[in-house]
Length: 612
Image (cartoon, rainbow, N blue to C red; front, side, top):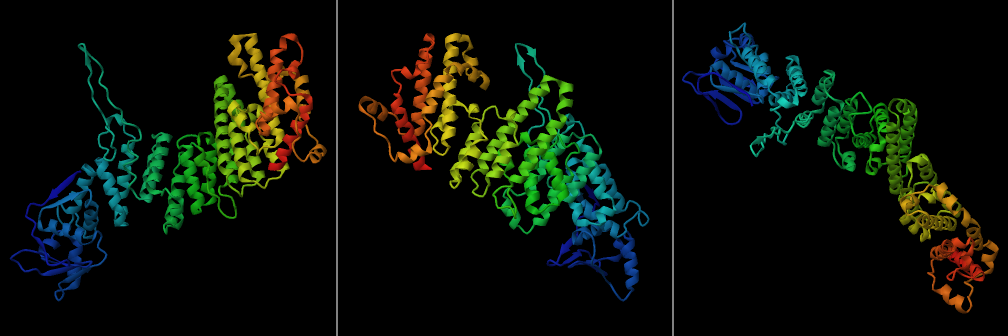
């Protein structure tokens, strides 16, 4: 820290209690100056020789009064004491913490060059220009002290000069930075490596471009706003660095708990802070700030009641980079009159805007960059699909979430964004579990959003045993798994080198491969269709006879496992007998007799009825 010493005489100021200051001298004091609650018993001559204002006040008071009141003195008693010591020629030390108060006090006392050459105002200005404003650290400290000395510090242009000094230094080449005082990481580490007599280049840890963002976080929001506006106006700062600076400031001053901010009496301050940060965002809406940070600002903006215009600006920015967000970022609390836990309508709006923006720019990007952009867009869409499926899984726990809202948000994602639908299946399963009052039609409708052909093996196995799913969906899962298994075995027999491709065939290829099995599969599936009339006639499981009864009991009681066993027998028997070009799957040693099929179908139907 820079400092300046003035005067050469020893400090003779003494205190008599907390409210009286006097100069230890053989001469009797002849004037009392009241600054706030402190009385200064001093001598007229040294004071009047340096201060034009004191000359006027003493002259105005006349010979009958030796007491002068200074109620509105800038900087208070401490600032006046600095000026008084300077008048006496006593040693006084100026630094970044007291120089602004001293400068304002000197201005108030009119300690100019017209009264005495080399007066206090002149000396302070030299100190400010030659030392303070050239120091990064001192400029920030001085700027912080100016707030308590308004409007004097503003009128004397100290605030403006501090801001210009700070803003100019932020754009200096980071390689020459040595003055950051809150940046804890090492700025440079010279490490000469000598190996077998060969000197390698010095390793120097580079200083990041955002080295300065932590240093200015202690500034009040008004001063911080002015600094950032000046930094941006110079046009030499990268938008990403601006975004990082705003994020750092938000982390420093916004509370972690949203509930605390609502109940806090400083809600208005938070509102002003959020609105200020929004107006300081980089002009390029596509870069600068992370989507996570923008969503955090949006949560606070909604919570503290930020005006519509800044909120709309945030929504536009978020919609440009939604694929970068996390599920936690999207959990924006709903506000009345909404009765859901989270604001699903807001996320739906952001998703729609994101997709519209992608569609609008697609042609131009494809012409400029070709396949790379196509691949990039595919990746971002897949990220969006995973994000929204994860969000659906979170909001599915909300008992107040309507099925319409769930389906609308699910449908807003294009099919290309969901090459695998395990995430959507998980969300649907949670919704079914949390909303037990759904009708069969509603269950069918919400499950209709899912394509069972896009489930992985693990998800299919879970779905096959999931009694919350409609029977039709379970049958579709098992049917497709049987087709996929048959397709994989056929591919192995035909060409071992194509094994990896067989497990990743498209839906069309799987269906084409299983075309020869279609007759047998349809026959088996038709046996499992049980009409409502048959269900009403059969009140309990039909008993099986002799050996077939023993074989049937060995099957698991789960409806899904029994269906899966039957389909698996069909597929396995057909693959084993494919060389004979017959549909002998029903003749497999492990297959169930046609008569037993009816009994199986009836029992499966009754079990479904019992848990519905």
